[in-house]
Image (tube, rainbow, N blue to C red):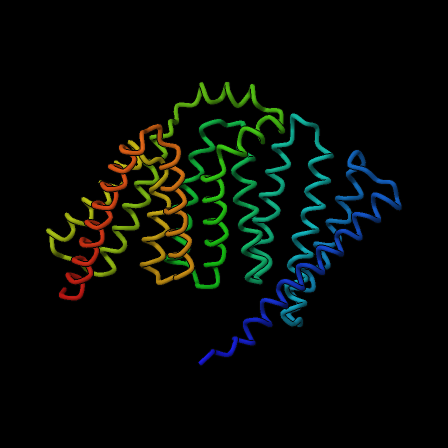
Length: 337
């Protein structure tokens, strides 16, 4: 017998999509009015900044009133995001080419403020996402110091999901998505952004002078992973020395693997472990998808023969099975404790 479709879910999806489409066409109308009617181009950034600020102000004011239905709510969130896009576009064209990193800093501060001030969930997701993305690129001139942002943000995410109120979890999701996008797209977009901003020579020089190396970042991420493992052991009140040794041994193995071979694989593992521990299914799914994406990219980038890659896949399968059996034994030991 064929199941009836979930009408409420279909309507909710429709209202979300229609709200965003409405905001998109409104922005096209405003953009067309500025460009075609008033003959304003990107060399005149102030009108874009003004219109973006006005759109953000009215959208956020309406969101704060909390008197709208789903369609209106999604329309206002999309309007706020679109207004911010116009505002940022104007800021980028207002500043000279060698000062565009300040634009990223302005975007980051603006979105941090909006994340704190506007409590609507979907709006908080976007503002925390934009704040994290902008933060990464605002510290580009500091070279490898930019890499230190990753473990600090990972630690912040762990603290949010472990100790903050549930309403702040959406902020953690925004940061996680931004982190993963930076990791997976860094090779494609980073060089382009550096050259676009006009900081390539400065960035190359800063890379030479900073003492922070990529392997140090993996060790710092390993510290975040060990902190999470320590909190899990304390939560389940595991007292068996043998079980603790097994858990910390597995954690150290993955940290060593990440530091020596699979760079940054520790981040998906942190997300998976955190999602499993706090029972956040969406976070767990994001972690698993990111791990699959990372391993797939790593596999295709390996400069090995197909036979050697097959051996690597076989060995990886054995490691995953061993990890599964160890976790199963851990759960059984936790129940017995």
